[in-house]
Length: 299
Image 1 (cartoon, helix red, strand yellow):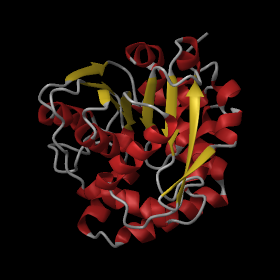
Image 2: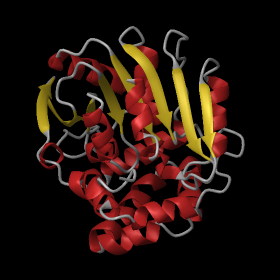
Image 3: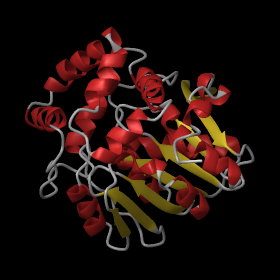
């Protein structure tokens, strides 16, 4: 079975369709536990932008087979999680700490994928005594990284540079993208593959992958465009926190990623001085699907 043949079986997993919820400080947080339900070997998954807890479905089969639990949490304003217009990565560790405490989890791995990297790094830096390791896949870096947007598809380049220059434009861009998504989701998903490399285009053609992304993005846009605007602004202004050497850090990146440049992975590797970086030839942004078994074996 290939790395994607199981996707049609997991797109509508019951625990993704009907997430669990918890009340933390009068705020609702929705989450799903995929893979093994036991929480003995556990990772906290940080989804991309736009994205939601559903994104972790790529890891379900490998996690189930290896006895690993993946806790995938919707950030504020996503899925059923209560909105928070001013939420930043520095606010995230307190929520994760409360979540794992409520579930009885003492030590855990942090997984950050794509736009989830700022939040994953914040947890690794702040909760270092509880975090056993940090795993970043296709992770974003601050836009000040040299050649940060080299080879990135034009709409992403223009959007991020516009928000960087005019932060208030994030609201307009977010509303436009949400409107396009809701008006014709199929055309939106098809359009986002334009300009991607061979590996990513092939993955999007695999059964179930487009449906997974449609559902995943749908959770992000479930309320209004405010959350997406907030997360776009975060991508243009965040800073890499100090991750202590006590937290091992491993990075993977496809060398044909046209959503997040390889230059960003190299910058993260430089700034997290004790990290290990593997650049995978011929792979694109969805390299997490190829790494599922390896990631779960490390947890």
